[in-house]
Length: 119
Image 1: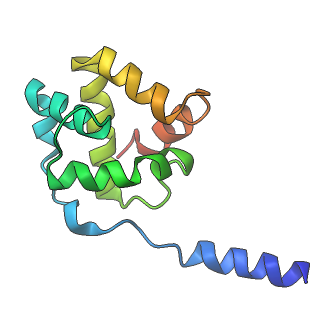
Image 2 (image 1 turned 90 degrees about the vertical axis):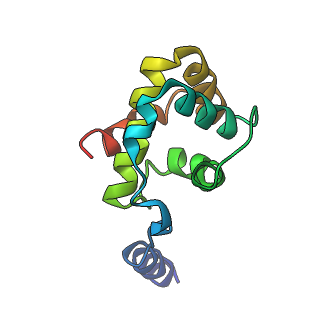
C-alpha cells in the first residue's frame, strides 16, 4: 500500500501542470510604472480593483508561495520576479504587508525568491 501511495505521488509530480499560459506574454516592464505596481499590489491585497492579469495572480498567489512557484512556467517566474523586485523598490510598505499576508511565518519567501531570481 505504501508503495502505491509513493508511486502515485511521484506520478502526480511528474505530470504536474503549469499555471495557464494565458499571461506568459505579459509585459513585466509595466511594473516599472509606480501607479501600475501600486494598483497590482492593491488588487492582490483586496485594496483595489483588479485587471484580468492580477486577478489571475491573486487567485494563485498563496499556492505560488506555498510551492515556491513550482507550477510557474519560466515566463511566469520572470513575471513574479519583476513583481517582487519592482514592488520592493517602489512600494516597500505595500510589499511588507503583501509578504506578511502570504508568508506570516517568513519561511516561504526565500524558497520563492530562490525559484524566481534567475528567471
